[in-house]
Length: 67
Image 1 (cartoon, rainbow, N blue to C red):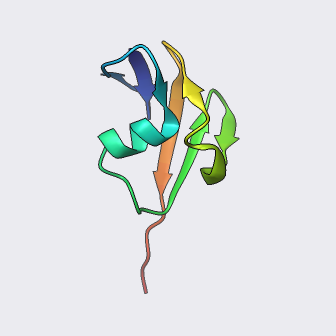
Image 2 (cartoon, helix red, strand yellow):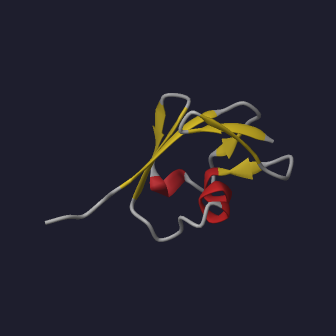
Image 3 (cartoon, rainbow, N blue to C red):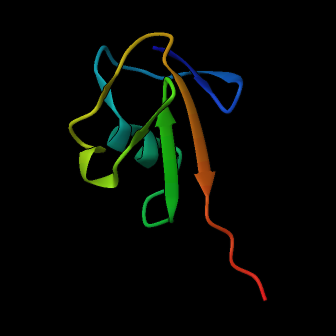
């Protein structure tokens, strides 16, 4: 499956792939994230049930702390 993530093409294995699978494959589990898929924010509670499709465009933003 080919996805665009933050403007860059990425390939992933498998015919079905959820946002939760994506987060795990990118080693982002446990991080504070905002994920947008095709212009729509995906709530964290829907990561497991939101299936990605070939060519989906995602933006992933992580929270950064500072002081």
